[in-house]
Length: 301
Image: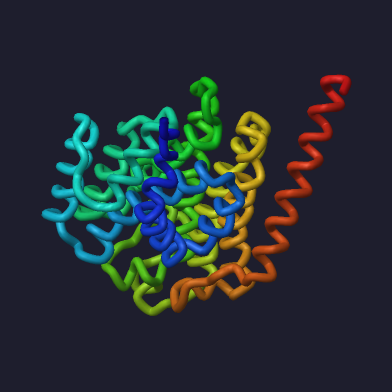
């Protein structure tokens, strides 16, 4: 008799392809989630590769046809079929091993459609709604990997969505200049009006007091949305807590880097240095150790 092959090993080349996608495109995610055990780590790589494929349909190719093709592939996958390519082979293994649901994957594609017919958000509520589709959905994709084999309640789902939206707001604040050059303004109209920020200011790349005020208004909301999962981090699997908390600290650190760079995000993208990233992971590790110690003390252990 022959032992059944581990599907993760059997599809090693497919997961290697996914890993290359995340390694090339997201240093923060790759650094944080590489701390996961192998199966969960590979699951994150596959989820990220799907999200990158969706994002590239809009940001790289600006192609509704490509996005519609990805939608058809997802529909086929959802119906039990197997589209061609390493992405789908890897996702097939992940869906077989973890309690994944295709609903947030479809939501991600809806978010990309909104970018193809982009209009500036009227207020923070509209921005957060958009943020759910393009990033809160990712939190729901990752949650079955980070709390595997155990029920997930609505409160934890809300935490995962909030984290995704927080990260999207951080991305928007990091990429204000790049988005302006691409013809998009994600800073809400109401926030800009309240701060006295004009489109002429953005066009001239003026990081003036009005820009900093509008930027900080969105930053405060982003920082608020990081807190629920940080508070509930012990509800994740023990082996997933540090990677998830590290991703939170690393992403939140991008905003501090923009501030340290003098709000130069209209001119260039700020990036957390390797040294600072290592310090942020250490901060996450220390906070997690304190929380775990406090939890044990509360249990009388």
